[in-house]
Each structure stands twice: as C-alpha cells, then as structure tokens.
Length: 239
Ligand SMILES: O=C(O)CCC(=O)C(=O)O
Ligand SMILES: [Fe+2]
Image 1 (cartoon, rainbow, N blue to C red):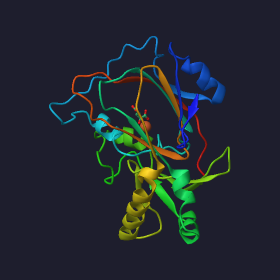
Image 2 (tube, rainbow, N blue to C red; image 1 turned 90 degrees about the horizontal axis):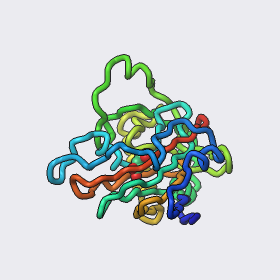
Image 3 (tube, helix red, strand yellow; image 1 turned 30 degrees about the vertical axis):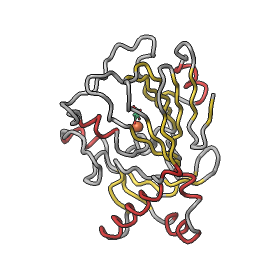
Image 4 (cartoon, protein in one colour; image 1 turned 90 degrees about the vertical axis):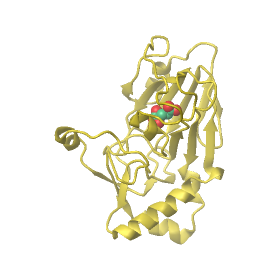
C-alpha cells in the first residue's frame, strides 16, 4: 500500500480487494455500497455538453469532509474503483492537518476558540442539494463542531470545516463569519496541501475525514461510467 504525503492510502491489486474485510479491520462499517464484484449500478455522467444535471454529482465537485452535518461524522471513507472514465474524474484531497500546522501561533489560538455550525444545506455551498420535505429536514438538525479538531486516535490537530456544509462561524457576526471562512478555505486548499488521485480500475483509497477535505473532478466525458464501491466507517463527535 502506498501512503502519499497527503495522508491518503492507495492500493492497487490485480483482483478487486475485499474492501469489507479491510473496513472491518480498521473500524465499524456504517454504510456500505455493493461489493466491487457484485456492483451493477451504473453511474454514468449525465448532462448535456458540459453541464451536469444531477445536483448530487455537482456537489461532489465542492470541497468537503464526509457527513459533517452529523454529530458523529464518519471517521474514514473507503473507495474502490470499479469503472473509470477515459479522462478526468480524479478525486482530490487537501490535508487540513498540514494547513493547521502552517498557521501562525496567534491564528491557531484564535481559531481554536471558535466553533462552526454544519448543516445538510447551506447557502454557502457551491451547489445546493435538492429540496427536502419538512420531515426530512427535521431528521438532520444543525450541529456545532469545533473549527480545530483534535484527532481522536493521534491527538494531532487539524482544521475541521466543510465548504459544502459549514454554514457559519458561531458567536461572531455574519460578515466576520464570511471573512473567517473564506480566509481558512483559501489557506487549506492551497496546492501545497493537495494530492489528486488519478484512478486505475481496482484502486482502493482510504481517507481520514478528520484531517482531510476532498472533492471530485466531475469533468469527464459525458456518457462515460465512473463507479466505485464506497464504505463509511463510524466516527466520534469532533472535539
Ligand atoms: O467519487 C469520488 O471520487 C468521491 C466521492 C465522494 O465525495 C465520496 O465518496 O465521499
Ligand atoms: Fe465525499
């Protein structure tokens, strides 16, 4: 298995790896899609010309950490590629631990005192999810997480924000919240913290949602298939 500087693990094998077995060794499986060997679902890039029709697909192209709108978001995600397009479709990662480490001491202290509200939907997201019923909305009340998170296994700190789901910094006014979020996002998504994974069929990637954000380059040929097996591992409430 190769570990890049970015903290992403990547493995390629001749046959599909038994992702479930690996997942069970490193955590508790929360959500599992069909195993690579059984997967039948087609994920074909929709849209006409360059415009995607499916909002969920568009949303993947925004930086995010998985499921931060839950009190205890998934600690890690496993993704194994089953079908890849001829070009594009990379999964991109930024290491928010490295971004935190590079902050000035006074910036670290200021951010450590702040918390943010995460929501299923926020006007800040580059693409908004589909409208939901009142019942569905009631199932996902807003949650508050610290902006600097201490990793529950390693004790190392990282920026914990989600451009797709973080609505605002709490206890500051709107303008200040916007300024802080824009500033942190531009810091944490710099190229020096970034790793773009160029998929090969059979690659298995495991990433740590506690100290990375990711996004997908949805710019791949219309009509082509891009399909992965995906497993989420249960995590703890960020502190
Ligand atoms: O399809 C991908 O490369 C990753 C999509 C994603 O954001 C996820 O699986 O959490
Ligand atoms: Fe994701």
